[in-house]
Length: 105
Image (tube, rainbow, N blue to C red; front, side, top):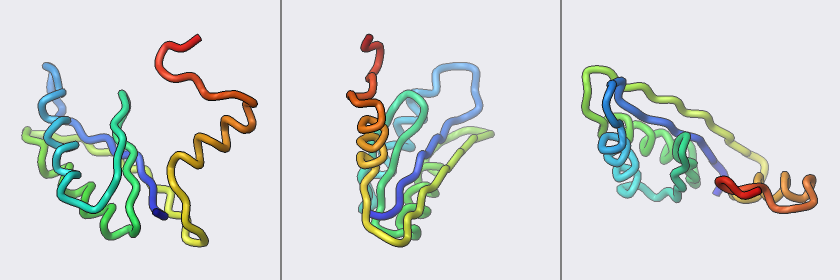
């Protein structure tokens, strides 16, 4: 996969956003992408930019509300194939250990 993105989609509301965020994440299942949701958004991997944009649009449109906030940050490496986990592995090599996960100490 060559395109990796961080997607954050949420309604602008006072109450819990979890139900609407779940709709956005579920919309990704209709596309040929892999994804991993974390507390700040969802990392998406796709073979091409068109698929990534279509998936992000579907996630945005899946959220109900008078106002929806979407942030999309894309890393489109055009010279070689790569996977998102490689970015973490490179940082871990520099650290000389695994990166912390959650509240690991």
